[in-house]
Image (cartoon, rainbow, N blue to C red; front, side, top):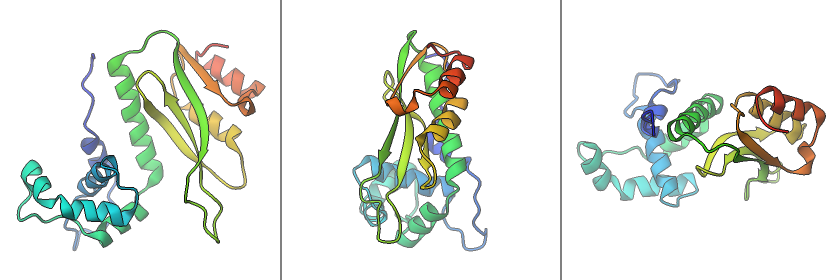
Length: 195
C-alpha cells in the first residue's frame, strides 16, 4: 500500500449535515458509522440497526469513548437514513473506493464487473422493485460505484454514467450482453480500457 486510506467514519463525517443545529444530539457521521457497523454485523432493517445499536451501546461507549451509553434511537436512525443525500453519499463512497484502489495498486488487466441486480424485498404494492447497477472490482472485492436504475430507463445509460466516473486503464470489464453497445465500447476505449 502506498497511500493511507481514510476510515469510513471519516468519509461519513464529511457529508453535508442538513439537520437543524437545535436539538441535534448526534453527529451525522456517527449515526452513519453506527448503521454501517450494524449492517456489517448482519442487520438489514432500520429496526434491526436500531436494536443492534442499543444492544451494543456499552461496547460502543467503551470503544469510542461515549459517556453514559447514550446512542441514537430508532427514530433518529430512521430519519437520518431516510433523509441522507444519497447522491453525495455515493460520490464520497466512490471516491473512497478509488482511494482504496490507488493505495493497493492493481495488477494489469484486473477484472471489473458491471452488473445489475434487483433488491430483494424492495417491491411494494405502490412501488416497483428497486434495481441497482454496480461496478465491482474483483481483485479487491469492492463495489466502486453503484446507482439506482429508474423505472423509466434501463441499465445502458446508467452504465455509461458510472463508467464515465472511473479510471479504466488496465481494467478488463465484464458485463451482460445488454452492454455490448458501440457507444459504451467507445467510452471504455476513450477512458483507457481495452476492447
